[in-house]
Amino acid sequence: MRWQRLFADLQAQFEAAGDEEGRSEWASRARAEMGAVRLADRLGGSIGARLVLTCRGAGRLSGALTEVGPDWLLLADERGREQLVSSAAVRAVAGLGRWTAPAEGPGPVRARMDLRRALRGLARDRSAVQVVLDEGTVLTGTIDRVGADYLELAEHAADQPRRAAAVRQVHAVVIEGVAVVRTLLPGWN
View 1 (cartoon, rainbow, N blue to C red):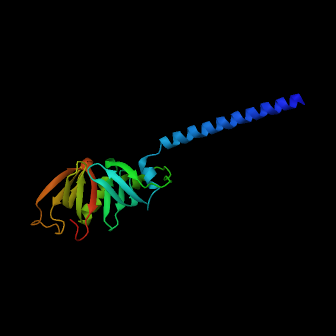
View 2 (view 1 turned 60 degrees about the horizontal axis):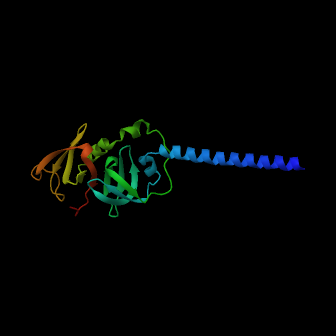
View 3 (view 1 turned 90 degrees about the horizontal axis):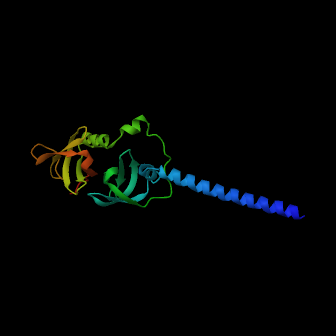
């Protein structure tokens, strides 16, 4: 009998040590996996959620997250204005849910949908926009064209269409310096 109790006790100790080792290994793996998650993946799990972003140059922005690109995110504020945010300008995000989007390769089309291409879409639409630079300057006008590392913005009043007579000046803006591009709605300045 004594031997059976001894073996049972040793077996219990062995199983407890194995369970502890398994928990420790699981926790270590979870930390390593979390260490590989990028902010874009974390944000991808919050599509549709209302977020508050703290951005260099633009301060706090809030809205529903509608899309996440390789180096940008798109928020829609409560009035329907879209805000294209450079990921490089984001300093903090509040309102994230518990979910993270699965890490997956961006694919050939998605990988090419970088900030530069999104800006080209705005230039094609000829929409009036506000461009907020990462040091706080706000420029209002229409994006005329987008180069490899810059955009040209024809500065004009927000309530006027882009016409030669309305353009005050044209700015060449380095894309790395762009924090946020907001589409303007009628009546917005």
